[in-house]
Amino acid sequence: MRSIVECIPNFSEGRRTEVVDQIVSAIKSTPGAVLLDRESDPNHNRSVVTFVAPPDRVVESAVAAAKRAAELIDLNKHTGEHPRMGSTDVIPFVPVAGVTMDDCVALARACGERLLSDLGIPVYLYEKAATRPERENLATVRKGQFEGIRDQITSSEARRPDFGEARVHPTAGITAVGARPPLIAYNVNLQTSDAEIANKIARAVRHQSGGLRYVKALGFELKDRGIVQVSMNMVNYEGTPWCRVFERIKREAARYGVAVVGSEIVGLVPQRALNSVADFYLQLEKFSEDQILEHRLAGAMEEAKA
Amino acid sequence: MRSIVECIPNFSEGRRTEVVDQIVSAIKSTPGAVLLDRESDPNHNRSVVTFVAPPDRVVESAVAAAKRAAELIDLNKHTGEHPRMGSTDVIPFVPVAGVTMDDCVALARACGERLLSDLGIPVYLYEKAATRPERENLATVRKGQFEGIRDQITSSEARRPDFGEARVHPTAGITAVGARPPLIAYNVNLQTSDAEIANKIARAVRHQSGGLRYVKALGFELKDRGIVQVSMNMVNYEGTPWCRVFERIKREAARYGVAVVGSEIVGLVPQRALNSVADFYLQLEKFSEDQILEHRLAGAMEEAKA
Image (tube, rainbow over all chains, first blue to last red; front, side, top):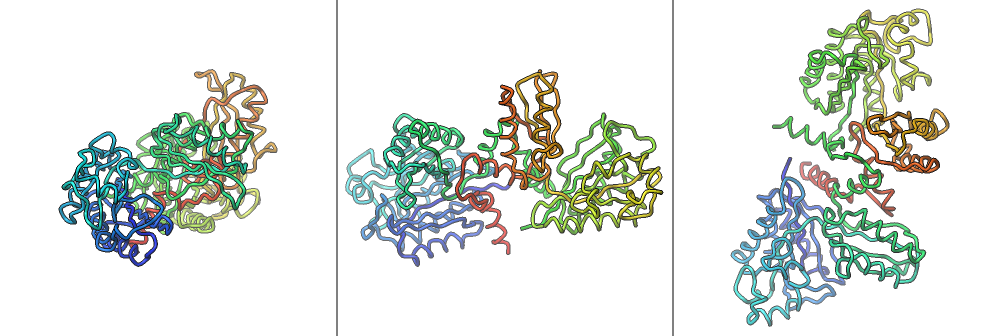
């Protein structure tokens, strides 16, 4: 099987299209990298780029993108709703095929070293690549944002970078580099206009307030549709299966006499996650991905090549 | 997207492994063909071989296999539980990627012509390739089996082959060649030892007795487990979606106070079929296969090559 790593760098620019274009070009022009998606949010003033590459090429692409971002984005002039601390704000490496989480942790470390040596940008390692427990959570790492970290980093041992001296890059700030499982952004829409019900259900299912371990959730109103939504990040769909999250929300909503109107996948999902949903609901006894025609075909093709 | 046709020839030999080996070798040695699966049943005295190939290569592989089967299998000496009429009994062509059902009908016709011209074996066209409505159903085509067809074919217009004179090949019989959607063999296991309940549910869900259009079903006892099973062929999972079949069975079983223990996929299923199950149960609002990471990746890879 071909080895593939997904990389989803976030850049602190969501308004100047020409800047994001140049960053995306830097990724596309490194051999082996394949762009899957790019999304810019002007309110957040932030762009999320998704690409895949073989493990021996993915760091090169990420560094090339961070180089362009450092040249083009000055954090001192950046404003936006989303918290940020670097021109390249975060770089997560995600195992997709033929690579382990440990491989991605090693890639995060290699990328961190390169950001420092090539670009002079200091680095925090986060999530599975974290070197201290409190750095597993990106929100904790980014606390205070560019300005706050710039002021505290010189004196606070807790804020010392994993790579680099105790100071931020004057314009490019500091970057969080990490490894994590694939994340699924998933929303469930509810047949009520009562926002409080969405909030209550979000609190019931999310880890932070006693719910499911790998679920982050918030309640929202969808004013144009007159309904509400539980908006989630499922940060580890093997640890907390998708079907349980959905069933939990349905049951909590029923407790208020509210039905599920539908649900939405935001961005991309791994095929394995969808397969696990079908496996659960069909009550399959011995499901294996090897029973999927396309899977068997891909395996047979690889064998034929070998 | 690479064009792929699946072909699942059935051969009237399930006991002599060395014979099946030679037939399988004939397939593997034609360029472009990739073997996915082979299964031999000694009671049925029948083997089912699954391979894929590009549309311009698949007929060559099927004919090569039928040639070996004609050399090695004499229907006059064949006994087994499964009905059969040819050493190569049936050859269905199934669209997998980048080909239409019409393409597969054309392949079936081309294959039929070759079986006659190269091997002297007459051919009935069946399912989507059928030239008369009554030949859409393979069971009708095969009625009377080798011996019955041999005796009736010379005098009955209804039994006239689509390719060839009105007589069977003396040892290789006659072959049904057709085109069909992917078939899913699927069993649902029920928490009761009462075989009559499985029979009643099978009758309720299958097309033949008033049920769902693209479902064939039979009830069975699983004596070793002390339970019963509704065993199905879903012959068109787009026409009759999988989730409806499963939900129907669950509801019918509940009418007898019987729970579903689990279910089983036999053989291979298309990925799209599993995705449609997840789509249904998650109540997704705007699901597209383009939201699947692997799908997007495959598309991006193809674009990069082009």
